Amino acid sequence: MTTTDSTPSRALRPPRTGRSNGQWAVDGREPLNANEVWKQEEGGLSVRERIETVYSRDGFGSIPPEDLAGRFRWWGLYTQRRPGIDGGRTAQLSDTELSDEYFMLRIRLDGGALTLPQLRVVAGISQEFARGTADISDRQNIQYHWIRVEDVPEIWRRLEAVGLQTTEACGDTPRVVLGSPLAGIAADEVIDPTPVIDEIVSRFVGDPDLANLPRKFKSAVTGHPSLDVVHEINDISLVGVVHPELGAGYDLWVGGGLSTAPRLAERLGVFVTQEQAADVWFGVIRIFRDHGYRRLRTKARLKFLLAEWGAAEFRRVLEEDYLGYALPDGPPPPTPTTPGDHVGVHLQKDGNHYVGAAPVVGRVSGDVLAGLADLMEAAGTDRVRLTPHQKLVVLDVAPERLDAFVAGLEELGLSVSPSPFRRNTMACTGIEYCKLAIVETKATAATAVATLEQRLADVTASLDTPITLNVNGCPNSCARIQVADIGLKGQLVTVDGEQLPGFQVHLGGGLASADRDEAGLGRTVRGLKVTADDLPDLVERLVRRFLAQREGSESFSSWVHRVDEEELR
Image 1 (cartoon, rainbow, N blue to C red):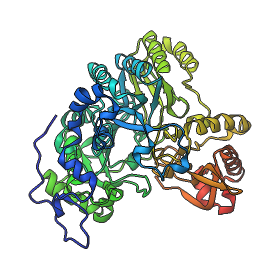
Image 2: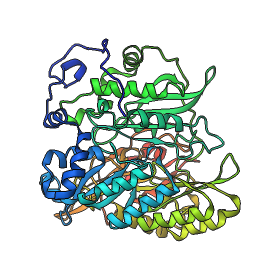
Image 3: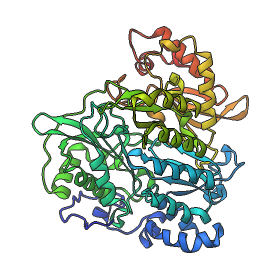
């Protein structure tokens, strides 16, 4: 859907200092790199017609490079990694040399929400077109692999018949809007974010005026006090709070992001009502579109603009130049008192239960999803939601059907009572499919989980504080390594003159949670690297030292930042 939009006439124009950053509102719209050239020549949304009428008919070889490596992303499609290319060659080969003739396809699931009919369609597409693959991402999406371009129109037809889409699931666009998996059903919910998410999606997703951003734009909205949408690392987050005079609404955060230059989001200190929320979101994304840095893609995220302007100036520009009115000051959200992954069995406000289950590092399959659909139907529920922690939450399970439903989940490999290691480990796609990856991640992390469950069985009961283990295949931090207790950045490690798959280790990061007052980035210990095979040894050693040396109820991250480096090796 399109909206009427133009750059504000009073848009901020700070004096230019040195080289142009390619800011539309400051430097004009002359494209300063190849990506900006083809985006201006023809937007990414336009490629859908060619996929449906030409490429799906004529096959992979008919796709020109700027569509294949560029515009396809606007519809959730990336070429996947060609099998057999080791991590040492990732940086040596071009995108074309790394690419297979198959695609990753991402389903956009705003708020992570799926109905039972939608879940059956998602499962069926995996079974019929994706060789059974289906991963739950940490952005609440489902990702398929092995997709052929010939099958994409039929996949779209099936998805759209049940109200799903892949529109702007990737690309320099407003990506999926994260939402609380408990929206509308939790007794302790501050405010239901569903109306805001729905309005943002219906008004702005697919809008050509917002389809050429400097880079991706990540959003999150939650009204749950567990702060369950990782609000500190999104470009914009609206977090439910109660204003002492104005009632329930949202606290506004902007400018978060990780990758190779991590930066936590900042509060603007304003209070946003439910009715204002979509317009405020629209104001922030237009600031990014108009003032974001387009010359270098490595500097093209909102966090770099916020670092230059500061929160006070960003608020001023938002209010004066994009909203046309001032927002009242507002309170920050309280520190969470419950976990934000929602694993386990919990009571809803209507007397039914929601059940949070943990697959291993987000890896499911078409067969697992089809089995889940059968379980849900038998239990009389038709709603499931994915989480930003690679988990899933089934809503509306009646008390009398709870035991059978939980037992069925366990049989599917979806644990409602996972070990601390299974519950708190996530992994990105890795070298199995990703062209940027250097090392394997999913199987490495799954092996580490199974090994740690055995080796640390004697101390599992003592782990009353979660220790998160995030495994990433490259420096880009899709698995949020800088905000994990133990974050692993994929790289090649030299041992006795031989290069082996391994990781640089980040320690002591985290987001605001029931076990941590505020977010913080992890520390790197000089020279601390580990091979993939030795990963369980490192984690076991750290966990045992932590338990032996912790003071009182001290968290793992607090211990990491307190002790000397030698204790962390």
